[in-house]
Structures are given as structure tokens and as C-alpha cells.
Image 1 (cartoon, rainbow, N blue to C red):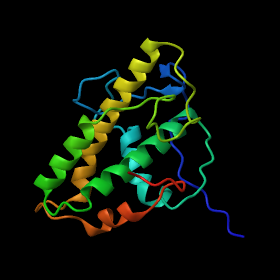
Image 2 (tube, helix red, strand yellow):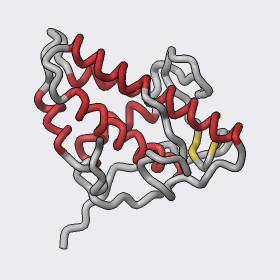
Image 3 (tube, rainbow, N blue to C red):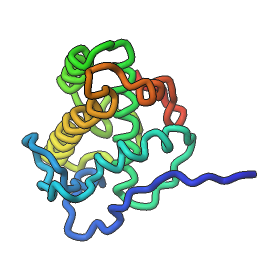
Image 4 (cartoon, rainbow, N blue to C red):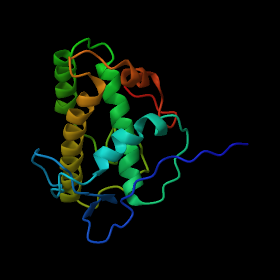
Length: 178
């Protein structure tokens, strides 16, 4: 039987990286305020990896976690799937922007709260401060991912890119995105 490998994160060295609930708070190339350290614009960050690997990783039903960054990659892959589902009916970039802004305004659950997509992926928060740190990081990373996703899900003329939006129909790790 053919055994395929998922694409794993290259951020395997977690030394010096703050964690919340076992989730590494990796640096981001972001202008959005939040707890993430700022990364150099010329380097690849976890969001770049998630978007680059999404169309391959979404086909897998299993994901062998090799580093804490892989857990964040799983979370982002699922979030991209959710965002693409929201963009599915949007015929223009303006409609798509409105849809992902509304998605960004939704509450961001953390492990142990209803609505968190992967119970057991991250340990439960040890304190209210840890839960808020993770919530703020996930909110920041979701907002940044949404913005970057729009640039690939829509062509420069504002029309949908069918080669991206077709992936809204896929289930990632047998989980249905709402």
C-alpha cells in the first residue's frame, strides 16, 4: 500500500519560543496587533507554510505530529478550510473580504471550550492568563491568515480563483468545517 507523507512544518526548533497550551507562539510577518513576535518580512512564517501546504495536506485523513509547530499547522489548515467554505459563495473580492472579516469577528475558542475543533490537540490551559494568551494569538493568526488567503483565493481582477475555492469541499482529517 502506498504510504504518503503530509507536509510538516519546518519550525521544529522550539527553543526560545513562548508556548501557550503547548502551542508555540511563532513569529509572524504581520501588521496586526497581538502577542506574536514580529518576523522578518523576507522569511517564511507558519502562515506561509499553511497556505503553501494546504492543497496537499487537506487530502490526508491522518497527520503524524512531529513537532509542536505541526499542531499549529493542523489548526491553520482547518481554519483555511473554514475560511474557504465562507468564501465559496462570494463572487467578488469585496464579498469575500466581508465574509472573512465576519469570520474574524467570531469568538475564538481555546482548548477545553465548546467549539474548539480538535480536542486533545493542545493541552488545556493552566490558567486564565494562558487561555487569553492563546486566544489572542489564535485571533491574530486567523486574521493574518484570512488576509493572505484572499490574495490567493481571488485573482488580481477580483474574481474567484476556482483552483483554490474548489478545495472548500474537502474535509481535513475527516473533520467537517462549519
